[in-house]
Length: 177
Image 1 (cartoon, rainbow, N blue to C red):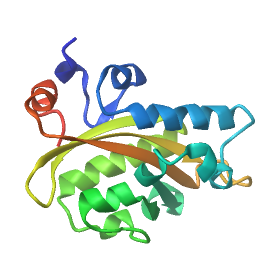
Image 2: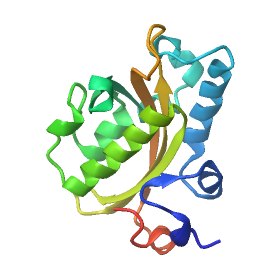
Image 3: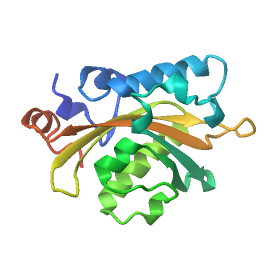
Image 4: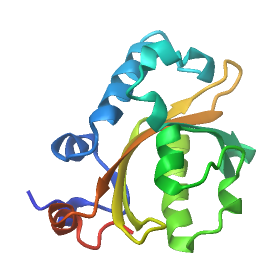
């Protein structure tokens, strides 16, 4: 399968995510979310750290949806994210980040898709970290609801990172950031 032709920006189908490395924790989170969803819409209060387990928690991010999806704010930025990016953005809004416009646009596209479609969104983004190493972030983002709202009020995400090894670059070419 030539995935480079199938990838449209940072968003992937569940089928493609199943066939790629770097989505193990995402599928673990998806299974927990789907179990909770069987009882109705999943809220932030439904997220039980014991249910998620110690493998997922450091990779977890919780995002507040602001102004009906016009902006987003990191409510929780897991320890693996802090280690990867070298900064804790808990409390920071997406529109406050000082990074390239292309990176912000891709992150906003992922957040917006999850908010609008109110379902799982798999993603893969290629970038350079602060040490100029090529990295690939692979993950899943899911909607969370408060009991009184029709639209998601929070998003929850789990991300894993691959180094820019040759196979990853050959697989994705220029189809990620």
